[in-house]
Every structure is written in structure tokens, then in C-alpha cells.
Length: 132
Image (tube, rainbow, N blue to C red):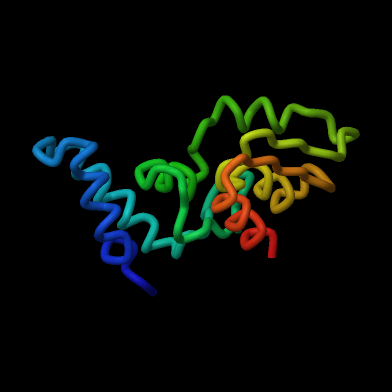
């Protein structure tokens, strides 16, 4: 298993600067996020998207990964999403980012089809990678 913290070393240093390297709470949050990512090998372990493989070179914030992997990310959105009647078979994700919702709803089998729209070409390539 690759060490996520080492893999992200250069971007991580930039993120540490943004987070305020002198702030021990923010630094620890980032360390824990990387540790949890390594522990679960970037695979969501709990919640409705259990089994979803997150991409390693995510465009999303490193510190959000831990809550995603633990199934705790944006609980209010997940609750609303899973209150949608099963008769709705198609999910449309505008601004799909890394596909957490767009691909996640397929993993959970709550929707039969998902259409993800994202402005960034780099992120669209990541979405295609996640699809497979």
C-alpha cells in the first residue's frame, strides 16, 4: 500500500502552507486524513457508498477524504439523496468534481444511471477512470 502522505508530498507542503503550518490542529487533521486514507486504501469503508474507490490524485481537499471514507461526508446531502424515491432511476450531477456522488449512487445501486458534468478536463479524465 502506497503511503498517501509521501505520494502527495509536494502538493501536501503547499496545502500545509495554506492550512497554516504553525496550526497544530489543522496539521493533525491533515495527518489523520492521510492515515485514514492509507488504512482504507482510498476505498469508502462505511455508509451508502461503501466500496467506492476514490481516485488517488483527487482534485478535492485531502482533509475531506477521511469523512468520505468513513461515510460521514455531507450527511445532510446523503440523507436527502437517499430520500429520493426509487422510481427515479437517473441521477444528474452538475459540477461532479471527483464523482463522489455521481459514481457513489451507482455503487450504492440507488440509481441505475448517472450523468456527471464537470468543467475541468483533468477532473473529467479522473471521472472516466473512476467509472471503470
